[in-house]
Length: 207
Image 1 (cartoon, rainbow, N blue to C red):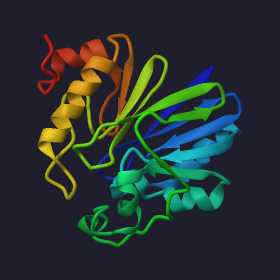
Image 2 (cartoon, one colour):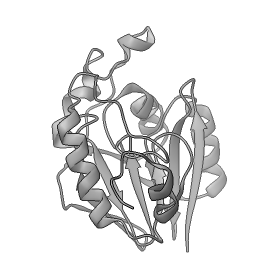
Image 3 (cartoon, rainbow, N blue to C red):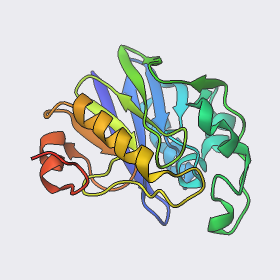
Image 4 (cartoon, rainbow, N blue to C red):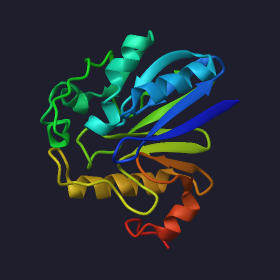
């Protein structure tokens, strides 16, 4: 049985997800307040296998280093966002008033890759637009959409690497892929079934 825990962290309430499958743990987008993330992981009494960043903005990578120092695990990000990890300008940490350099990724992801943790498999879906290397992670009954798709909105495209045309192409891609009874876990805000999100999100051109 897979356990999914959501923590809303930092001043912009970024969703950090901790998933335990069997004895292995995956952390998606470790945001601010690393001590809270580490405390929750230790409570689960599992083995941290991977940290996955859905994209390289500071509010989704800011606890990378603390978790990598605390646990023996690997850091994964899409190949097109790898430079954001080590560029305070591109990862927007300068926008938050300080300079943050994450450790470099151990593995670079591309569209179609499979991430295995315990008996869980997540398929990497390249969904550019918010950043060039934004990804979603497609599982059995749920999907993590990062800052591409929210409950009632979508990610911004006015930051460096953002592209309005590409994010709408990504939304169209996701709309065809996600099943109505799948739970959408976004990078910010509430999670819910896709059929409910389609009713309230004005950016999904679906009746």
